Length: 116
Image (spheres, one colour):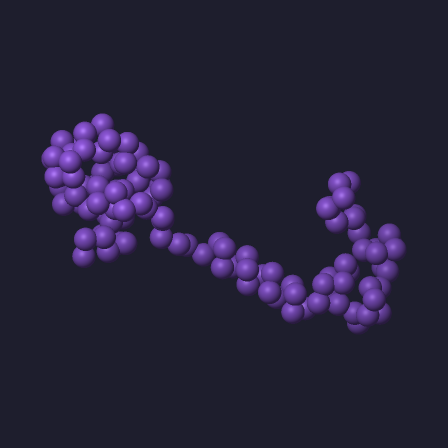
């Protein structure tokens, strides 16, 4: 076992060993208080909650124009970049949004109220 891992079983090595609080001690045999355990649960809930993807400003602009039906060539002209750069931004957008098509990306833009 590594230095940072919890030992197998409660303190004392016996499964029936009471923690520092005796038989009615803390629910966690390693001594965590109920408040600490509750705080850890709240942190876990908050970290697993859905958050909007962190798109860059340029990715957001590209997504806006995709949602408006523009082609990569159109978007490149509008934003003053090459179509290849637009494509690269879209690759990142698709990955961040967890989508595979322009249509799905446009639907995600509507849900995120991009361009609304």
